Image (cartoon, rainbow, N blue to C red; front, side, top):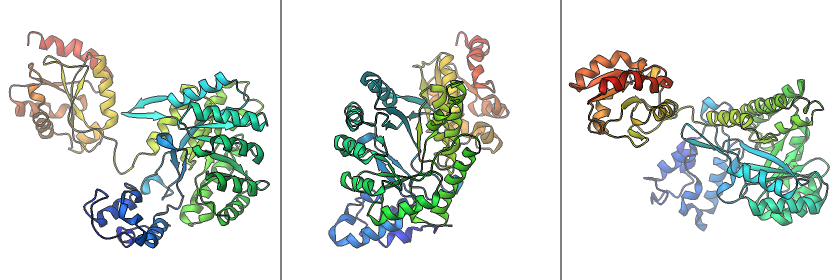
Length: 474
């Protein structure tokens, strides 16, 4: 197992002045957040003074994750991949979500190319209060022409802020594209056993991250990485090959797993870099277009499997919403902190401009629960939603574990001012919390407590058939 960092391991390399410029109370507090990846070294301005040069270098080495983080692109849409410190997500958390790229090629008509890139850049889907987006564009050289490839790269660079992956094994073609967009820090794809020297020069000249490719040959991959590291390159991405047909998929999963475990558990720096997978390769199968729906489905679930087995970058071809949503949803779930449930602030929320006659609902502050209920309350015409602080735990677990009690509900209703928001003096609690209804009515005295449905999708029907008839005239 890799060495577990402790605050003192980092603190000894900090200035120790407790100046507070980093926003923390002292250097020890800053060191603690550094090892948790909650802050970055750049937030300590003093460490960059000349007199601390040796300390800075030593601290960077101590903080370097077993899987190095690599930044692709520039500006606010730049993506950072890698930075992993544990093999299993439950041990701590996985930093830097897998970057998802959609492929384009240099033979596409300009209007079609621009349209697809804009669709990728503007794609957004909201789930549990988070916006799920696509991250990159992978430009493939199909023409073999340096001019066409460079032109396509230039068009993307001018029309979009998305980071690019430039895909060609020809160094002459690659350099032509780098002349056009090298300042945008694209990911160069890819150096192999035949061209690695030329690609090493290009990566060094344009200061761009470089993909190292050795499909199916992990020994060659390690050898190439060692040679490139000796050349002075450290922003590398590994491509062990993506085989998706038959037993090839098992082989791919095994290679990705071995690379990640070797990097973290054996601390092999030659292999301690992000991994790129290409589920889009499923379209190379001779039978791919015979049943496009089936091929798209395979691309989707293979992408999810590869993400689970440590892929830091995925290159996809399909752009159908039903293909992308499982991948984006799985990424969202995979890259949450397993120690901290997704939650919303425990307070009162307005849905569709409620009035003093609108229903008042109470629930837990689990993010998934809240957003499900919010949608159904909106469908019922709006209202007030009060979230009790259950630590982000789901409703049923909160009721069973006594984290959603009559006392807590009554206290939250008073603290949030919810009791003054409505005149009908009624509150709706979840069906799964029915057991607290009597006790809550005793605490709220002249208030009526309604036990709502167990399934929030029944809220609109409940309001029309139960709540409104009883509230008429109030």
